[in-house]
Length: 586
Image 1 (cartoon, rainbow, N blue to C red):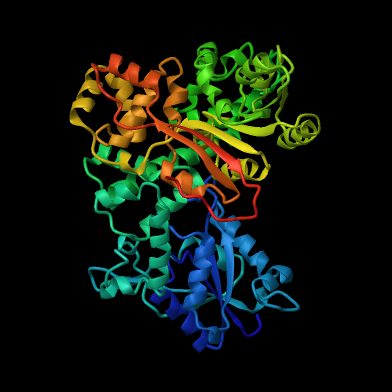
Image 2: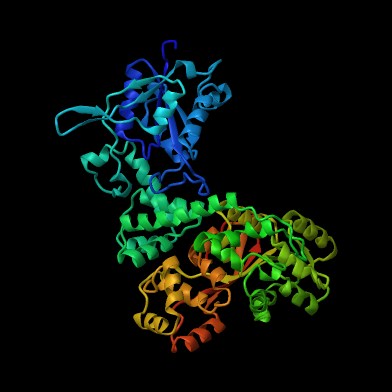
């Protein structure tokens, strides 16, 4: 090769340390331009996803390096997501070194690639044997693969990066000398960790267990946003399995949970069931198998759970005990449409997640002049709804729904109402983070006059130790095997939030597999109220104990009381004035 001009430095940089910086400085001292390759994976569905060992996102890593590396070094930063195989990743990286368009995006404007002018910086690790001899350990697999592809190597002399302790180092205090070597930008790491802690709806639990602010907060933030795993689940499982809550235990149970998700993602790629079978709605078996509800159950209970989900003669077996499920949804209809008593002239009703359309048909029968539109992504449910539509329109296309509302406004002068009834908690149980964001974009930006919400939410005050008397009554009167299964998933009843969650779940024995997987309480009421955009005002809020649930719990558990308010009825009204300030909740 020609004289080298570039030095390839490859790590996961979690975070960028003083040792990493030494490599950059050594490359510069040798007259080479450092090319820093950042490895990580933000995609929770990827087998390389591991925010326990790599708590920083790819974007945070790049920013960390930019803050640490002096501009005078001329360093080029190449962010490149992990692959499953080191060989594939190495080949892809080397191809990028000859991709001038890609290099330009990274800040290196060169008329040709740099591969022929690049060397790989490797640190030989030597060990002494008992007889005083020295031997050279094998280079990391990625380095061996890159060298095998023909890129020459250059040994550098800095010490190895020792990182085990920094993930749990308390960032808000003065670090030890060894810990300081692991941080080039301690202030930036503290800033990120503090933001993650402040945004965590379960921060009270972390403080209750005296878990200080550290980069583990970034791990918890990532798995919540990217993989839908709540901090309270991690803490609850840790307490259940280890009898105490600490960093090591939380990391252990979280790693187990992530591994299950990685397993199901691999399972998705090998299923091959075919699509020919009897189904009156015309929905293929493949669509059932890859429905979020199906995958969530398989992820938690294994392949054998498919036997309870796969349709044999049609959609009526997709949810076990489907008729029971539908009958329960139809109960208490006057309570479900109570929002109409608080909205004057509600002429256009859209039910988001309408299922079999029972609520809209009830409203249409009550007032045939109303325009009622149902939206659901489940074609089997819409097939049920359309059997006797009663003048209600149904669609699985949101743009189609919005177009129908726009047309309806020409005929009906009434207000438009978007209804979210017992839906939000299911969105968080079954949809990945990106699809949740899409859901909220539809809710907030479709310009409905009103949004009516009926769902389950608890206050931050729910996070506290449980009443031992209530816990004792529950344990005495419930199937111990099923209860143990639930606690393994959501944490011990001795945590009041887990107790409340269990009491809400406990009656659904016919559809236990499905209901047990649902996070009924994905966020606190206070956090939700804080998330309402400024173009909507809070018109009505009722936070209460659901009457039927309260009575059932007393009956089933020897007079035990539901400890907290669990249900909300909420109406949001779209602003018509230019004022952009938010009303405060009284």
